[in-house]
Image 1 (cartoon, rainbow, N blue to C red):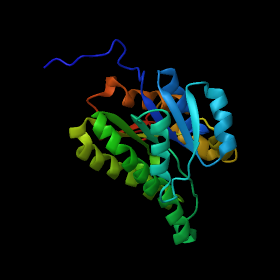
Image 2 (cartoon, rainbow, N blue to C red):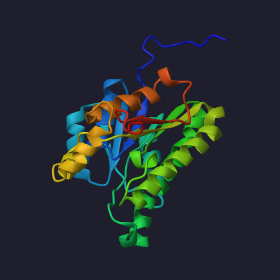
Image 3 (tube, rainbow, N blue to C red):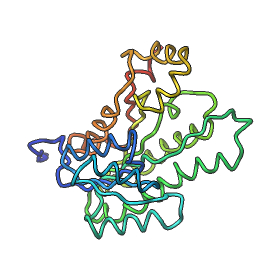
Image 4 (cartoon, helix red, strand yellow):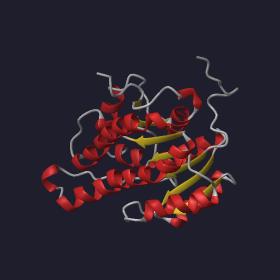
Amino acid sequence: MTIATKSNPFSVEGQIALVTGGGTGLGFAIASAMIDAGARVAIAGRRRDVLDEAVNKLGSRACAVTLDITEPNAPEDCVATLTKTLGPISILVNNAGIHLKKFARDTSVAEFTAVWQTHVQGAFALSRAVIPSMQQQQSGSILFIASMTSLIGMPQVVAYAAAKSAYIGMVRSLACELASDMIRVNAIAPGWIETPMLYDALDKDLPRKSKILSRTPLARFGHPSDIGLAAVYLSSEAARFITGVTLPVDGGASIGF
């Protein structure tokens, strides 16, 4: 069987991508990489001022939509609006999330639930909303931005780790369920990436910084663009035979010793 290949299989030219949490950090880097690879991108988040500033940086191929994915009807309304204005969404990147660093004994059920609702229920609701049009098009890519906590044990992040680990189960189940519709579902597990949040944490904890670097075979932190490029790859024709995987982009940290 011969399968036609684009002249540039790493391109996402003509695709419509929705990136949640796209106004800052890894989400912004993913949106930027998608645009560079030819896609039109809608970034979603709760803070309109942050989104507008990001769109100004991203340029004319970007737009913003205010979205609180914990609101019951918001994901479906968001997808319906974007479909009318841009066309069917062909790439979804579930990146929105909140972090909570607390010992388990100090984590309330309400706090645990809030993390779970944002990451797991929100990502599920948005994925569910894009599936019908992807099935109609018989193509699509759904990505979940997982975490090192999906792969290795870390203290004081029980709610976050539970949510990010749940992503892996959703990826596997959805990948099997949607494969017959040519919809691919994958995850990226970022390692320690150079962001203001990372430096704010590690500059105050130099022993932890040394520990992280010592167990990372490439002996450096990643750049946000490393995650963006991985997202483009997994959404492109170059990865057309890849589904149901969790790709660590971590300099080897998840396998280092």
